[in-house]
Length: 256
Image (cartoon, rainbow, N blue to C red; front, top):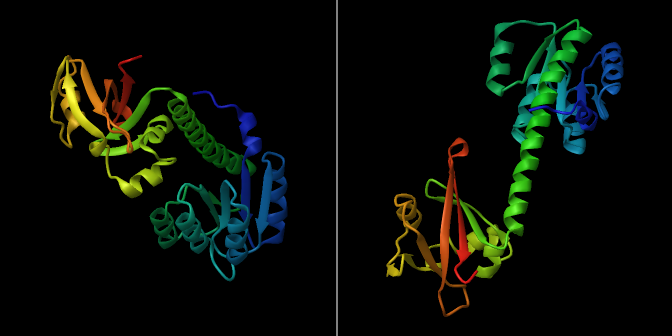
């Protein structure tokens, strides 16, 4: 997938180092490439800056007063594990490297810092960050399309109900999924019966599996709203997305 490098200019970076010369030189290098650059002079200032600005990428030295870079990285990963953290150090002791691996450090740069090495490490992590943001945007797009769809739609993974579109939530009398899950664990109580052709048979908590296991049959589900007395028949269609192990179910009112 091609990623527009103009997106790099929307990325913010926090750089933490107690050496004023390094702090000045590297921050100038970063300011030419990224939208916002924040600086801190030790780990304590670093975590304060991270909590205030929530930068997209963090670069930190290891050896610093008040709190070292690994302690800072551990706190940042505790707040947001997805934030890329790159460490810079003149030390190569095995204990530091092992702790960095255990924390989940995303990059390692030896001092003295070379611009070429810094740029390449930042490029890789920026690409990962931008790609993740693009995937998150795509997921929001898919959810928006599902919400705007005039048919009822749900996502199921295994036996877990992962998503209900707004059209179906409104039918059940709820505004959000969180509100729905406060009162119900599944759709079972709204499904009066599961049918094929003109027959009806009692549904079970494995209703979706009955449909999946019999794809050659045209299935109907009889749904009732939380306040409704009559059950309305809906034609059921489904599609399996193997890469994310999720089933998309659509319930189409037969009157349509």
